[in-house]
Length: 185
Image (cartoon, rainbow, N blue to C red; front, side, top):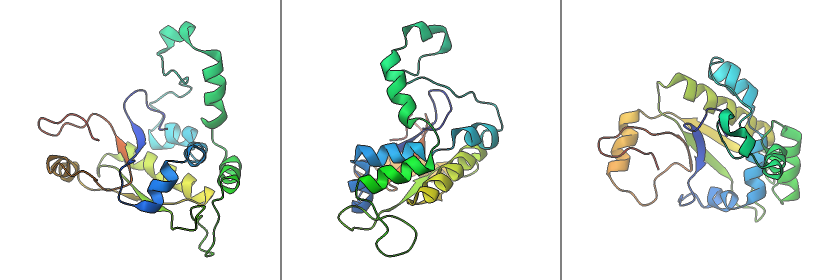
């Protein structure tokens, strides 16, 4: 969802111990609403200081290979790979997500609490900026998300502990060098 080619992305932890978030993460319409909440233009121009280019197709092929693109995949991708808070709110409402306690944020269709944190390494200013923009969009859509920024070293230490269900529920990831481990899962 973050507009940086093949490296940075926001990923859901489908094994999170956060039951409310886990329910939502397994709902394709919730994930579409999340995508529609991403202001990719702001991420490119403000969060990444204008040094990235958007417009990546669904296939994520480099421009030199765009003749291999699938038109139908691009059309489907375009439906949710845009910034549209009203459409995000509509998808949530249609899926049964509603604010039942008046706090401004939706709960799951079964009424359970829906809140989660997005983890990004501290000091990585473009990543923190983009994550903050993402969270702003999520909150505007009525999704209770916050940013946490542990040191990269602490993230690596947690990876080394081999936890089966690592918090948080969502993280921004890339190939993060952690000793012998090269990916943030």
